[in-house]
Amino acid sequence: MQILHPFAGSVQQYAEQLANPDCYRPGHCPQCQTKHPLTAHGFYTRTLIDTAFDGIIRVRRYLCQACQRTVSLLPEFVLPYLRSGLTVIALFLIARLLQAQTLNAAACAPPPMPYQRGQFWVRRFRVQAEALCVALAALTQPTSAPDFVHRTLAMLDSIGWIAAHRFLFAGVRCHLLGWPRGLAPDGRRAAFSTAAAPA
Ligand SMILES: [Zn+2]
Image 1 (cartoon, rainbow, N blue to C red):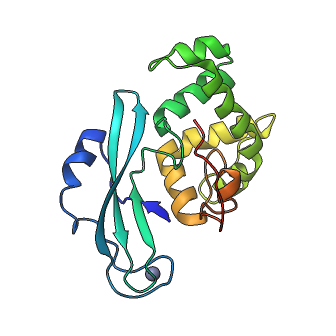
Image 2 (cartoon, helix red, strand yellow):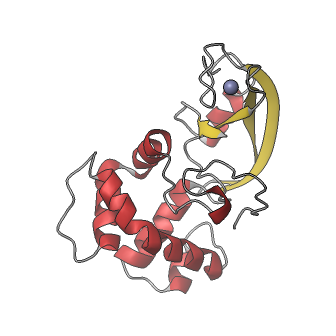
């Protein structure tokens, strides 16, 4: 299971503080609610494309000795299962949906990327917008935009994308672009699922 790493800062600062397993060690298991602190259990690596970073980051993993399941601490500037960082996705969605730039123009903003990737985000965001709007109403007043997509973008802008993601993921286990099918409804891997991570 993935939970949010309670760390705010740059990719570099994140990498530097990873060395100390005690720094953000969970004091209890989120899966079986045992009251014992979890045991450090190495790292996994994942790619990250951010506005000023394109490479591999490590994600710290802990093991619960009681239920033998692992918990990984995902930094809040990434979205689970997506290679691109939250800021990159936010900038693209704003350019494409709010400023109505063409797919190609929006995909050319740094870091440049294949337009199909942006198309995928737009499609997922449209599907997810109404649920996001409802969930984010706990944090801010919905605005009177013409549709859910614009209303949600305005709400994300007023809350801040990372703060909104933190609330959605940690609070209601909601993914900004929707969980992949094998992980719906709340991001926990379903038994026998072989769902691959999307781009
Ligand atoms: Zn446990």
